[in-house]
Length: 264
Image (cartoon, rainbow, N blue to C red; front, side, top):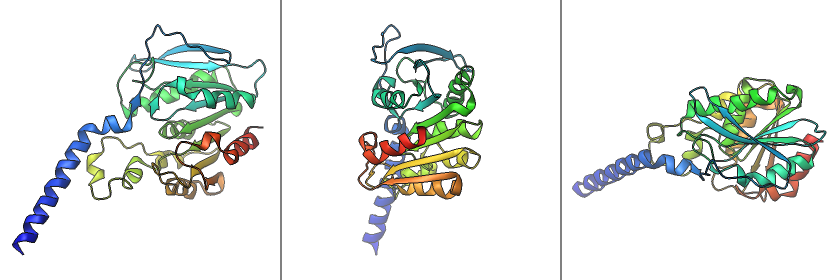
């Protein structure tokens, strides 16, 4: 009995130590930004216009608008948790080919954008770009697309506005729900500093929503997408891709054909 008590105490200590460590390093797990000098000149094959917006709290935010001569509308693209907007070239080309302008931005702390991670401020920043787009496009022609973490911001904006569509790719239902697949035995509710609660936003989304997810996604389990669909019901369409993982949907024929159908 004494041995079991010691083993249990060791287990508790390990759980506590791991939880404390995870609390302090979670920014490095969640965010993988690639910074760019403000003096850097972008080079893209598509015609583009670089812009800077100032956030509510005075932070400089960088974005790029990829323009066509006679577009159907604009796709506002909220990228994933890593890199910067330069890594979005495939998505930009895809939407331009479907005759949509594309507005893509870097979150605070990413690319040329200043600032540090702040969940509440990042939501405000996301809507700031939407308001910028509304100055030049009718809301009926604005499509919100969010990949991974970016879907949390896209859903927040959709809940507070009236875009044409919301498209969600490989996203978390909530950070807490998604994290439990990787840290089953840790008290994640108390470990996490961030919520990234996409589900909460979906309750107020009125537009048609398309939810894409790969069945073989080992980073964010596809049950996250199923739970989103359960909230939206008939307002959404769930597209589960059997051969899809977290990284290959952009090259998947099912994904591309469905996107073409949506935006045609």
